[in-house]
Length: 176
Length: 267
Image 1 (cartoon, rainbow over the protein chains, first blue to last red):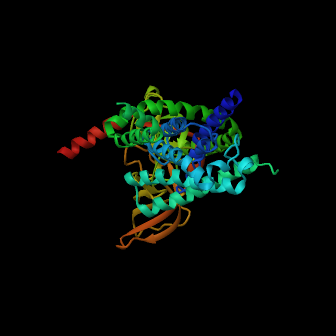
Image 2 (cartoon, each protein chain N blue to C red; image 1 turned 135 degrees about the horizontal axis):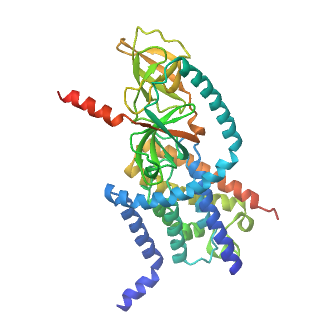
Image 3 (cartoon, one colour; image 1 turned 180 degrees about the vertical axis):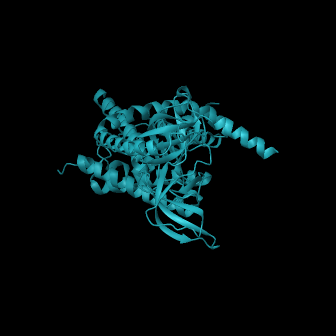
């Protein structure tokens, strides 16, 4: 239990720092803003209670919101990441049972490529990242620029986030 | 009552979700200018500190590059002082230069801003010019006690009065928003003889920038649609991707100048 706490705590810290110090500062082209911090919600154990999932998503989103997003003026983005991350966490149980029925998951296994296979993980990441990014970019479009541009940003950013997450998982993956 | 409790327990997941989303939406919508100002002051202080720490580390790693740049600037200064000796020292002495470091910067938006590590405590005020050894950077837009927010040259809002070096024809410079290395200069009369590679410098008419600061070099000359003016495409001498050390420029006579101009305009 304690080891687990430490492991997820470190993930939490590392992902936030990686996001605000590196990804937020990347100047790809203005269309690509990868958001890899959501990996934290993806890798939480299957048995995580629903309320905890939502609370963690809320805190995570809020911390990301507090930092300037590069493309926005300072401090004006409070709420966007909370909304997107909480929506993603809310849909997680549904998505998990949708990809594979509940009793097919081995007890004690984790939602990652090592335990569930790369194809399962790939599908999982694609769906979850899309949910997060679509909420995020939709909210943004609601208050900012035009639709085609937002859609392009959504697609490019999603592709990049998914790629980064899969590369990361590739490093962790051990063929059995 | 019991039914209500049972309902809450049963659907706690959905209920928490709805409450959290409601909070998020309220937060987004309640960002009215007043609250935003109040909140962003605190948030800025916090995030600036984190960015500053990160910057201290990256700055250490780029010491070598910084050294090379300093050497280059030194060389340029030598040439400059030599010129000054010939010219007259009168020109620039109305300006004070404060060194500052760039701690946050963006180049990929239509409206780009920078953050500097000097604020009102160091005597920085709004509307001061910001230059680097390689060219102009922008204009201070707002200051907090320890930080300053600067409108970058790469910002559609900013228009700067410029002239061709060696001639007195002046025009107006604006970013073209497509390429972070290129700007557009308009309002240069069409009879002026412009060569590719000519230097574009600040005109000094605005009381913000000192005159003669290098800005860009001409890479393309074309006629404006009305035929009376030229449109110059020019490459910035500053690489905005690698900004580090900059100088904030204070015009000591600005107040006097503005008051005088106002006086004559009123008459």
